[in-house]
Image: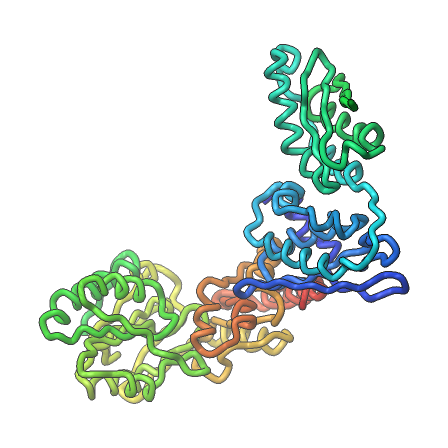
Length: 226
Length: 271
């Protein structure tokens, strides 16, 4: 078992329940399969739909505890709409492991989100903050300088698919690599990223940081904005 | 009475059940093999496989103390019943079946009875056990004997020399010291086995935490066994078995302390 999993199992920081506060709606949701049970508690800001806090309780094996704890950390500071976009692969990616009961957590999230649909949304981006998680694991791509442009493009595309796209998707956006020339990586946005100010700001910075940390330190990311 | 001891109980039980199915059951037409619900897989799986050649296996329900009773057996037997096959004591719950009662019913109905005594792990005095077949894992012959088990014509008894008194004492101390649900306290049990549950904490999670702290508790088939005795699924899936053979008082005190600390940590997770 990897260290991330162990941390969330042994010290689940989001275990417990929540109580309602003024201006914050307490949302409870649960799911169960066989003997396993999962309960999710959210405090949602009634002015903008942002999740102020998330806690959970569970009856299940260690993997369910890890999934619940990781999901709660992902939920905090997202809008309830962003919470809906959390996927099994994103939670598994957070923990670096396959999680057999992760659907229980997703079912509880969906149930909680459905109770928030009347709250007006003031969309705030979560992508750049969430992507910082990816910087915890670094490592240069061996022999990057010797690769042909097409090979470099493939490497970048894989990195985007694995480490960037899942987070951008939380804000209903998309990223793809167009070409790699020397140390310059040209990317194109899609979805909500195309109209987002962060696409040339903090999200772009986060993408560049991840590429520099995981592939090659001199890479520069240039977005195609046309 | 026939003793069958091979290198593993699985091998011994399979050999016996296969032989009975092929040599006796198919020729006499008595093809029903009975066993207690939640019985060890070394008995259940061979019987299930033998269903392909016409044997009909049937699990018998347990009472609230995890035992197969005379009444249940009497009500279930039919002229086609050939065999009752069971482990004398259950290694997960520690519960000992009322063997003398079961033997009587089997004798009255010309049903053969097979007992596996592996879970009793020790020096076995089975000379007057009164059953047709006894199997056990050959490996237990080389282990430290605990407990010694024997039978008399009147009742099944456990002989408890000093080591076994000590295991029983430590188990009693343990069970009185923890705020947990203790299973089958009223039943006759092996002196060194304790099956407990902290309601609301899944057994795999508790076992994981305990293992990190050097405590090895087993969940195994306990949940299925407990449900066969009418225990609710949530309580059954919270259950763990502890073995107190060859343990010291210091170790038990440490275990109690670890359980207390771990359960405090688990509290926020409990629904």
